[in-house]
Length: 348
Image (cartoon, rainbow, N blue to C red; front, top):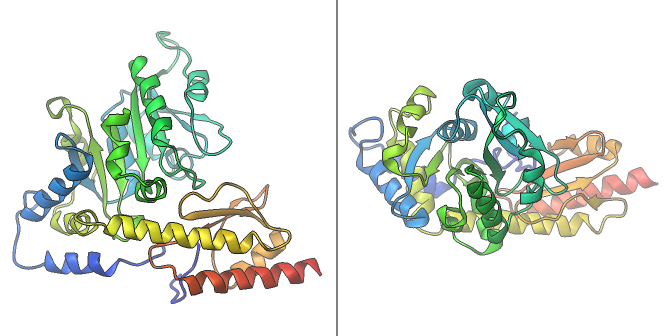
């Protein structure tokens, strides 16, 4: 569907930030060498390294699923497994792509708040050295998590240390890494090699870009096969400069942070508003740009007719509302007013 009204269904519903759109247009002059051998891509890699360190290897991609599959493939063999949270995007929202294209098993772990811990991972890492068992090789965490919570820097470091002590790798799905970093008041690089992350996906699309994602590897370049994996995985853009230009716009200054802070602030405003409505409760702490609330199914259906959004868990009545870089205070207030009115009618 297309709607002029800004909704709370997903940050993917939002358009392109004007500065990013301008950057794409500016990259459109003349001809440029294809497949990333162009000045715009060189600049994008340079600004990525400003955030993540000079030794970071950067491979731009089209979408988050592709970036996750490419990054994980660089760390795995088919008889090895990935330990991840039960609700992780790679487990529930990628149509089995990691398992199909990697040939590796995902070991899903139930979590109370979307976050893994060393103890939770330890309990799932079974069968090491036993030829009858898949071998745990990668721990994959999502920052921010699928329920909008954040790992602290220390929490990521603890998982990284646990993994490396056991000869394992740490992968980070950073589709909303900007929102997490903005929420915690740290730079993007705080979730790189210094806390034990080996490979991460960095998401631009949910932060104001258009089909722009990246795989960032902190492993030695001479041991990496990522450039071949990206090509074989159909994630190498021929006209790379138009992907690269978006990251130059987002990462050269503070646009990534401004967009993320705004989306986070709108989620906080939304959470504060609906928390005052009798009969509604928040399912998880609101730490980034997502609000998860519990509503009666009849109220959910009524509000969805005006503002589309997703039901997160039909069994418990949890719904998900996502704020975006272009969400306005008026959008939030109008939505809260509708929820308040609908809930009041339901309770009469």
